[in-house]
Image (cartoon, rainbow, N blue to C red; front, top):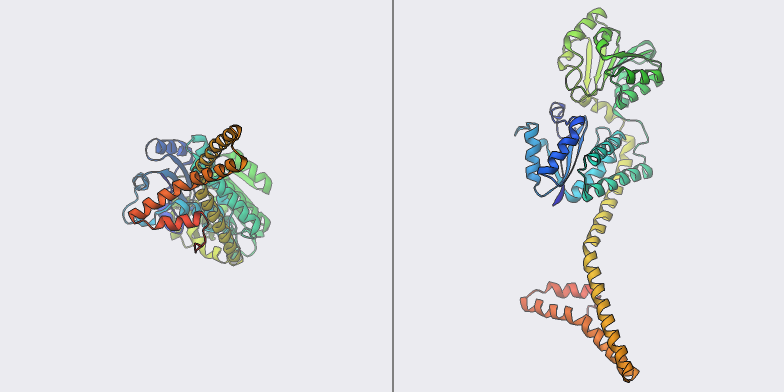
Length: 416
């Protein structure tokens, strides 16, 4: 039974595949419980716009991989996008993910919250056990240590910040423009915060839950609109940023065409941060639309990474140190039962021999004789089992036990 991580991310798979290999949040608990009833002893799933990963404790990683491939109909041509990491490699990967070292934007903190959400879902589904519990407690500890001891998060380089950076490259002065934000989650909140800080003239927030949109709009002096009104307000948008969990596109080509006509073909910048995508890819066919998806932001993001590269090197050193520490502690734990048994055996020898020595003293033997008996008997009882084992090993031609014994008993290289 071992730890395994199976998944794909923005480094291994294009957005077209990632948006197919997504687990709906409201189905995660039942999926995890089904996994534990058939293929795994412990399980946890992380599913975001940039990665889908299954953390499992299982006897048969190959069978779990087949389950993932079959569930999402991943064909042979795409199978290479899946990675499989086991034991300490899986642990090191979890630490790197939580620390933001495996993110689209180096050092971004959002993934840590997503990991904590995934951990909570697995806890509530009762699909965690000692191995995954220990893994994620260590993961959260390491992520905190990285944030505390390095400057990995010193500068704002989230997807939202990258989107606004792109916006600033196209519209140098936002005080004359209107942004339409579709969604009301963390990404849109960060986007709104950045746009507001850059002096955006007008902001419209559209969301399926009008209450959430109103709550967010209140903070930024924006207008909140129900999702049903999206198309009727497209024509007002110079900038559109979308990040919802909708499984189907919300911004269709025909609606954008009508909005462009109403705008007299004044250009629109559209940034689709959602996976699956919220904007139909065919919208990019309009000459007056500049459409960017998550993967398109990589060029923008790369400009913000230089300040974090040194911190990332320090963070990786922290991770290696923690992995080595945990592996060392695990190896010690393996030896604990043997050490405990060895101590109990020695204690039994001591008690038995001491009882016999006291009896001899009571019967009139001299103290010197009893002390000699005590020393000889304890020495014999402690030395006899390893001496016997060494002779048997040599008879079998096993020389390795000799070296182990010399190390174990701290013997000098030369016997006097």
